[in-house]
Amino acid sequence: MTVLITGGAGYIGSHMALRLCDAGEKVVVLDNLTTGFDWAVDHRAILVNGNAGDQELVGGLIAKHQITEIVHFAGSIVVPESVSNPLKYYANNTATSRNLIEAAVNGGVKHIVFSSTAAVYGMTGLEPVAEDTPLNPMSPYGRSKLMTEWMLTDVAAAHPLTYGVLRYFNVAGADPHKRSGQSSPTATHLIKVACQAALGQRASIEIFGTDYPTPDGTGVRDYIHVSDLVEAHALLLTYLRNGGASTTLNCGYGQGYSVRQVVDVVRKVSGVDFEAKESPRRPGDPPAIVAGAQKVRKLLGWQPAHDDLEDIVTSAYAWEQHLRTRNR
Image 1 (tube, rainbow, N blue to C red):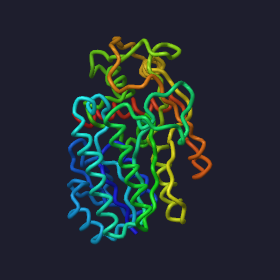
Image 2: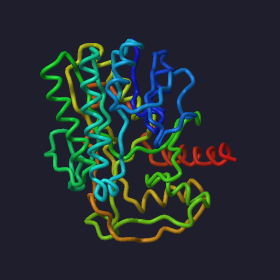
Image 3: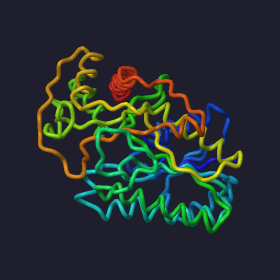
Image 4: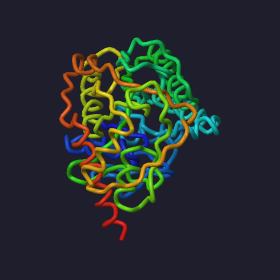
């Protein structure tokens, strides 16, 4: 029994490889290293440089390593970029997923866990959104992910395959043992960008939109620690292996924080009063989105260990400091 992790050299995928290797699982990582890093892949996993949409390659890996499950992270994730370059997102996300799913079916893979997004919900209010909230993605990124959800539903109805979809909210933080973290210097995640500013790697950060209908006018998001997120993946794999039915779950804490609140916490943790410039809203960004996350707790018994914004920021800041030392 071997697990294939697509995008396993990236931020979340590398943490998933660590989690499964720590549990003694056999892991194969497939990543084209466009945004991932070979050094981020745990030495206990097998790293293959390639595209998750390459059916011949994926089929060969399934047969060679007797892969029974796939955890699918590979894809593009920047909302504003998806608005300006939608075809990239439909190629990297939707088309790649379609080919991967076909290779999985042909190879007899039993279970797929898919990395989806809260962006499938689109415009929401300040109240938490449950999994049955109407889906109305505002960006090609959100639509490209939703299309993959639909494909999994249809394929599972036609073939002996079960799946789990996890709709992420805003993932942040790093492995507490500093084995992995958000490593791309050009990443757009707010907490990473703010930590870089605190360390003098950016002159300032931008707050995109200060006129939203939120308590302080800035966007509100539900931030989840990456270690808690991959724990949910591991529990979902176990659930599917034990005969659980295909399911779709939100993965967040049910607590929203505004951009200004996040900036304040990063300033507190770092002790640096870096500059935060106010800029216009970005296309495709909803004012607020917070997880209704009771289903994942009830179905999987998921108990977050890092559901505190200061904890998340502290680990992210420690990782940025580690990267500075590592890159010297």
